[in-house]
Image (cartoon, rainbow, N blue to C red):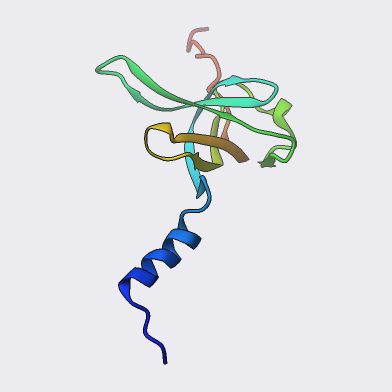
Amino acid sequence: MRFYGLRSWFVIILIFGWTSSACAQGAKEVQGTISAIGKNYISVVYNTDTAKGVEYEMMLPFDENIKFEYKKNLKEFAVGDTIKITYEETTEGKGDKAVTKRKAAVISFISPAPGPLQSGGQ
């Protein structure tokens, strides 16, 4: 059995661990209300702070490989629908030059947009 010193392990890690400038961070999810739908993106408001009057929104691009759950295609979704988006996040570069990119992989329908309020009158 051969023992490798600390210096050897450092070289092995340096060669195999940090040769790529892109680092996949895996699948993540966000749930909220659709605020906009475009040809190749979808925006969702995932948090609202009414006390501060602030909405937190995330715009996620997608490509032709996007998958849909509980709907057949993007045309069946509407602004105001509640959805869950599974997306991939990667970081390219290092340090101050690091750039995080996101891409939607699956859009899951949860519930439709609330309808207009109805009056209880006659």
